[in-house]
Image (tube, rainbow, N blue to C red; front, side):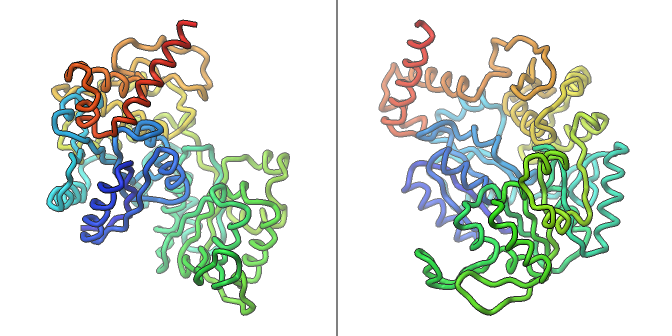
Length: 444
């Protein structure tokens, strides 16, 4: 069993403490979060192999976090608070059998990881173990990866949000067969005050709060690859320090005097075009040329729609394999998927297939594809009307129905309903209060 880096999201401190200890006994690295906000920040700053989500959190639904799971390889497990509610959850969210029902035992976790760590099933063969697609633009991308893999030059990836820049960076690292690790970092997630410490490290006592020596990302990526995502979000004041490190291949920890040699390839990425970088003045010219020795442009999904069926099948194969199901996509639904422009690119497609899977009834043969993929970022003006059935409804709407149906089942006994839903009575009252406020606003 491969040891995993896990984000455990639940607002019950006793539960998170006990579950984190169990996962620790299995050798996994666990980070906890007690709200949607905290979990979102963790997902923006770190990469995780697994995310365990409570359905209801004080500030929203755990499923809202699906949009913030960046890695194509991250697996999600939903936590329910009571066996009695699982049937209702499955009717609303689908046959996502990676459920954990409180209280969680060590044997449950062992079985879960044993089931998830199975060998891949049939489907499209990924290139470099990471990338799916056979279109001309993807073939060109594979050729560029092969060419740059044998060198040690810095690479800059250009592409819209959601095209898979980190996946391409991992593919380059894997193809390069470097002995060191792949270390990802999001420059937009670091504060201006701490980015120097994150990149270069610091010595104990070098500033308030520096209680111990810290190894920076450059040192962590020794003999490997440092991936700097959203490089154009790095403060201009910090860019000369990065340029100096790249040119001299030496760094100095904050608070130190001695220089340390560094040996890693730097892959940077941005969702801005070359023109936007110049126009917005967000990257120094000398740093740009140091980072973009070998620029690679990743095509958006709308420019390689012939790859969409392969991507859909790959995502669905993974879900079927993890959940012991055998759903397929009807040909008409595949045509509708290809007719949409997917402004969120591969990430949006992956999450849409995941949501469709969750909404598919257990006895269905085909995946339940929603009637519309309406998005505020869509480039198409024509949008189908919002369906009135469960299919295509928002997470908030589905969660509201779950709460309403549970209250009906227990004759509006809020204490019992909160227990079954796995939330505090206060959280349930907060949800009901927000629903009343929404209804009042709509009437006015």
